[in-house]
Length: 112
Length: 114
Figure: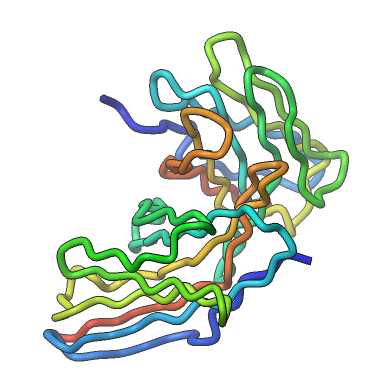
């Protein structure tokens, strides 16, 4: 079975632009979470979606938004990019609420 | 507030040495889960273990073992007979039971030299 997949792998944007990151969970998994990992730090929680409903939101500005589709895949959108948004964005999926989360390879976003 | 502390920033050992990675957590929840993840240079977080707050039994999986002590709010991870392939950053995490978000520590970079 395929693991969590994310696209694109790498992305370079300039300040002020908008970006959309995509995530496909493990087949059968209904929960998707997004994390931001800045170099040298642990991942920070951005959003969780379960059964297409937002179940949790981290301490991130409104420039960050996400959604989950009927097939349980998810998109993370970031508007008005800042230099500080440069990070590895990780997507994780779990079977149901409360189970272990399995992570994808991440999307490395560089904002110039 | 919930928090995970990994005081060891970096550990270097020689192959075949045993090494213990420390993790201390804070939470007011009575029900919670603790996790360990491995992050090799490729960047992908690899799930190692999940432990719930009601199960204080130690766990062993091959060369890996985990010691959960509620009395000291610690969940330490030991690698026996370390190998070069164990070189990675290891993260301890706590979940927020209400939102299911993971709260990560800052990680411990383990370098195993041949």
